[in-house]
Image (cartoon, rainbow, N blue to C red; front, side):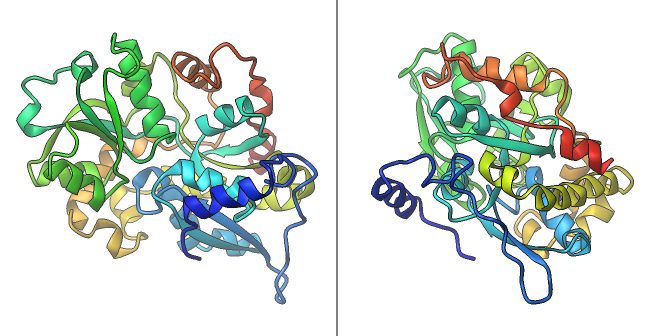
Amino acid sequence: MKPVKTSVLAATCTVLALSLTACGGGGGGAAAAPKSSNGETTVKIMVGGLEKQIYLPVMLAQNLGYFKAQGINAQLSNEPAGVDAETAMIAGQVDAVVGFYDHNIDLQSKHKSTQSVVQLLQAPGEVEMVRTDLAGSVKSPADFKGRHLGVTGLGSSTNFLTQYLEQANGVTAGQATSVAVGAGPSFVAAMQNKQIDAGMTTEPTISLLQKQGLAKPLIDMRTAQGAKAALGGTYPASCLYFTTGYVQKNPEVVQKLVNAFVRTLKWIQGHSAAEIADKMPSDYYKGVGKAAYTKALENEKGMYSPDGLMPADGAQTVLKVLSSFDPTVKGHTVDLSKTYTNSFVQKAK
């Protein structure tokens, strides 16, 4: 399945008058999951960058055969920015998204009901990289004033985190410019061509930037400790989420997917970075090399959730971060209990 263009999705939702039910945001718009001739249930899952290590559990589950073992035909598609994957799901183009949990809070504030069913990361896995020639003058987010800052997409989780770092360090709205540059090669090119002064990205792009001498780490959120230092608490990131309507109509399908992911998370805990890297497609470490890819994975392996549960202070930390700058969340009532559930993970355990 090819990535769905954002412009097409926007047009789709416009034609449907942005109806919550029509766009799959409520209980009435979701359909029962279809079964193929061999009895497998087909689920279309869009990922905000399959090759990123923050989303590694998706391809790992596929390659380990854990989806198949649950009777699931997981049709995976790729979209570099999580915000576009979210749009695809709301428009009914895909059934589920693997992206950052924060989108569920943002969407509820926009009167769209979605729900995270299993947490894959307990830290963002993101690093704010500053261009090497500017490393001496950009020493903290307080120096972002007047700078162009790379994010995967406007409205993406990297954009959310960047805006929070600005606000928390005295940089007011409009004093810095977010630039959508995607991830991987396009992010590297933006840094190389000096389109951006700094930017937020993940592995293996981080290692590639360092290998080429293009940028240096400024703020490192690849570990739970690093995330707490930057964001003030545990920041759950990658998760599997659906519209609430899909969850309500297809609980057995959701349970099977969660079973597969919980099993995958346990497999990660019991294997080395080298063993995990061996399960990844070779093009995932193209450019950076398998050795550097494996080393990066070894350094940030602790970001993966050990059990798939929402951390006790996780949802509240994310709400605090979004409430500090996001006008759709700030000052609005958000029912966190409706943005995630641990029930499927608890049954899987």
